[in-house]
Image (tube, rainbow, N blue to C red; front, side, top):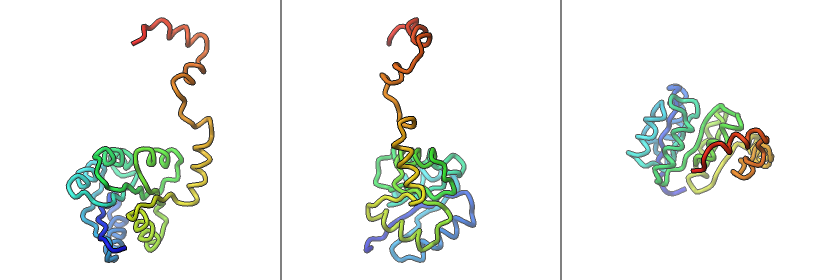
Length: 170
């Protein structure tokens, strides 16, 4: 990789965050331009620095998924990557839905993190392999699929339909 990749790191655990920042700054192709411990500050830092990558913890104050959503809504080119302990399917799906292009578990080694972030900076996506298969199954499960309004209406009982008919259409 020849271009310098700028990164902000947002995690509420100071020791962990310091280790990630140190590992990334050891690489000549990364520059951590800012770090913080909450979602509101992460959004401000992305707005200010417009980094190539925003590395976000899901469970930091204010919520990493909320920060990811707000960062995506800025419309800049920052790639959003979640770095978390959460293996919860809903967290993974919500992160991807709001615009994250990477989902990495905190148990990863420093060298692997550097490699994954390099790939993401180059335009690739990443979900931890152990989680990716599970998510594909979840996404293909019809009971988890978001229903259209017609499907939702069709699934109502007669009583629910009768009650809805009392209200005027807007």
